[in-house]
Image 1: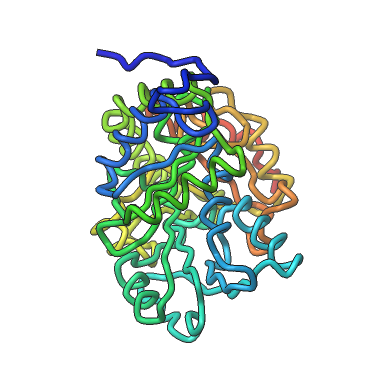
Image 2 (image 1 turned 180 degrees about the vertical axis):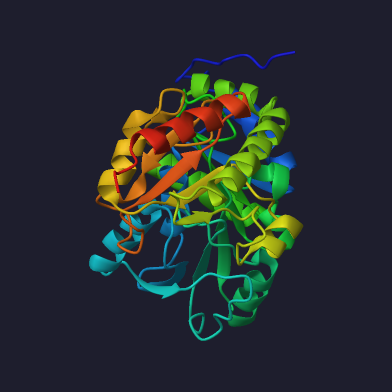
Length: 348
């Protein structure tokens, strides 16, 4: 019933594998599972989500052009800025949206980067339409699908060349793994990713691969519960007098609501905005069931003021709080958050 954890760095000379940096039977089991989930040619496991992102970016030729959303995951943004500053590549930004026309930005581009929803502003893009625009311009397309998971979106079936996951998040699902996965649409792209992993040494541990494979077994039930909880929490926040705005694709007021519900689902991440950083920090410190910490996608609920991170985009409001909604009882979650909002309310 369970794949074994293969702990070996060294193999006999006549074995199918030559060395532990080049492959592992536990990795292979995980990669086969994710390949099926994503309908790709093959998946390649990495030591972290950012390692998977870095491997895809490493395939852009020297001096090439990457077209990326203006508010991507902070790690992606930091790496793109670093590569651009060194002259390794050039970055053009676009504003994501359900009907975005980025044909002018794609002229001469090598890679289009898509993140939907974006982190933490939860902007929604039309993967299929952007992939068509990129194909017309002769650019490859990579989609960070961490938030959607294969439960709700399979970017390769919509025309993408790469689908990328921080498996640290929903795929493993228990906040005990660092893991990344990149899935290629064709055999040659998969081979290129494997070569990047081998030469850069960005390999996962067999135990982490086994934990991620185990986590995937409960992905469907965890996502169903987390999304249902998030939808309820977002609706309650939307009606709360101390909340200035709620960013959640599952709300009809969200500009990308119709597209999200038809493609990637509402998700289990909710962002909301209060007056300022001090109030947001106080709310994050005042919760008991919600844990104040970075990351997302685990069974437990996390709360965090994103702009406290120096690498976050300056467009992220100081008072924005990101919630990673877990699978606890939704009434307990809301009561704890409502108490935190009430206890930090300023006197008139």
